[in-house]
Length: 371
Image (cartoon, rainbow, N blue to C red; front, side, top):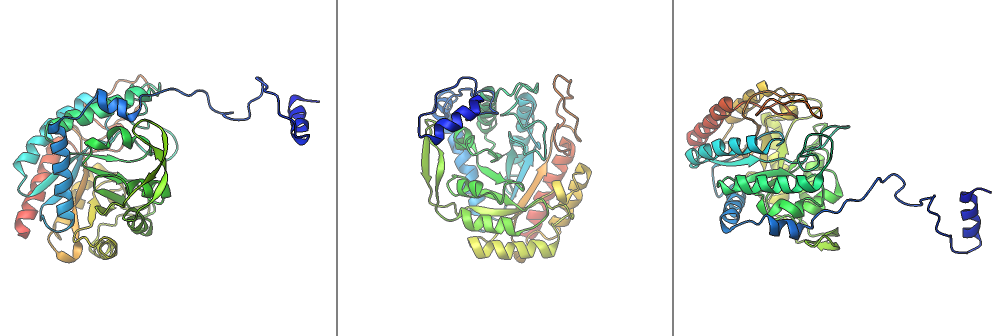
């Protein structure tokens, strides 16, 4: 009789199954568990100062006021598709801070600092998971790198935006985040909707990858409600998390497999449905990349032009725009140990810095023209 058959016989006889080091009943496909710092430990080691907290709180308050129609400025969420080079990200942030200051009368500029990338199949999953870009998956180092980027960028006085993908990583970084997204692949996830109900910043829910809107509207309804769910606390302990609901939520239109969805009719219909849930005057952001540009960075400017023609129309309910932008235009392929060009995306293609400045200027002009 085989060891496995022996075990079955023991179980059927109501006898304890002897421990067998050659046979594993659990974690059969797990190579290892690696300890990482708790959220509280990392936050203490890389601590936010009063300056950081003021920048975060100002960013959150400005976005929330714009959502409610109490601030007529345009929210512009702009920056790299993903951050893989912290030094280049800080150079980008320094330039963007100058634009934020120069255009502050018209725009609420928030930098995309995305550290987690949802993958359709496989690929580089973001700075948190593989900061060395070498396949080593040193996630403990990645958590530190991501938090340091947030400290550096926020320290410049520039509020940050992230995508919430993993349900544990927010504990390590969201005290430094002014706005967050729930992406197209996770918008129908109950876990992410519940998580959003307890987050402290405004949240944008993207429409599904197929372009459908129902998932995002349902997500709004879930996120504004209180929930109880399993999570971890600041000490890394399993806990039941009880939330009050997050009122500062909205929709992000990002297009879909069938094409763009930034047209006048879709934006108006989205605004009406989102307003019925949230009561907010301006609950729609248009993502100028992804399905709306066919993932062609050269078409982001055309999406901006189309949206700006309708800026200020009350039935559009527009809060702002999202742009994927980097120091240099386009993208490059990544592979472990392959040299990379500085300032060029390794995920989605981005517009370059010069075009970014031009697009921000045009957004500012549209806001002034609508007043």
